[in-house]
Image (cartoon, helix red, strand yellow):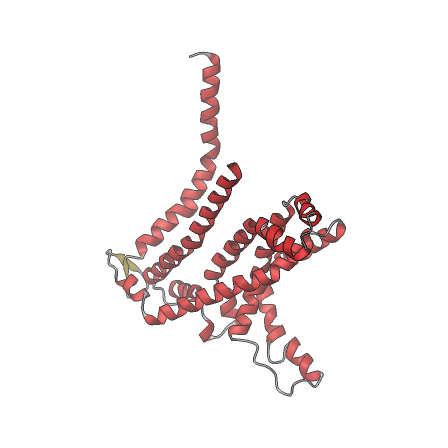
Length: 291
C-alpha cells in the first residue's frame, strides 16, 4: 500500500474516532436510559416501591383508562393552544426584530434572551405575585376602582396558559427571526417593484419563505409543552394537571416506576409524530432546494 492510500485510510479512520465521544454520550445518556425505561414499563410494582420485571401489558392497559385519557387530552389541548398563541404573538415580534437594524436589533434580541438568565422556577413562581388574589393585577384594578373583588386569575386554565406562553415564547421567536433574516431582501424589493402591495408580499413571499422557522418554532414549543409539569404544578390547580405531572407523581410520590415508565413510553410515542413530520418536511425542503 502506497503512502497516499495509507494517508486516506488514516483520514477516514480518524473521522470515526473523532465521533466516539458523541457516540458514547448518545448511547450512555440517551439510548440506554430509553431501553431501561421501556423495559421497566413491562414490570410490576412491588409493595415497598420496587419493581419486578415480568413482561406483562397491564400497565399499558391501565394507561388508557378514561382518567388518564382525560389528562392526556388536556395536555394536548394545552400544548396546541400554547403553540398557536406563541405563533400569533411570536411572529410579529420576530418580524419586527428581523427588519430592525443596528443597535436596536441587538437590544431587542437581548430582551428576548434576558429571561434565560434567571432560574426557570423563579420566573414561573413570580407569576403568583402577578396573578394572585392580591397580586399586581388585582391590586391595581381594585385601587383604581375598576373592580371590588379580585378576579380568579390563579390555579386555573388561564394561569397555566399564561405561564406556558411566557415560558415557551422565546423558542418560537428565535427560529423565526433566523428564518426571516435568511430571506434575500432583493426578493421583497422585486415583489414591490412589480406592483405587489405590502400585504400581498407578506402573505405570498415573506410568510412562505419563513416557513422553515415557523415549523422549527412549532416543534420547539409543542414538544417541551407536552412534557411540562412545573408550570401546571405552580400555577394550576388539580384540574389543570398535565400528563407530565402524573408521570412525576408516579416516580417520586407513588413510587410506581413501571406505570410512570409506561406513561413516558406513550408520551414519547406521541412526541415522535411531530418529530417525524418535522424531519419529513426538512427532507422535502432540502430536496426542493437541491433540485
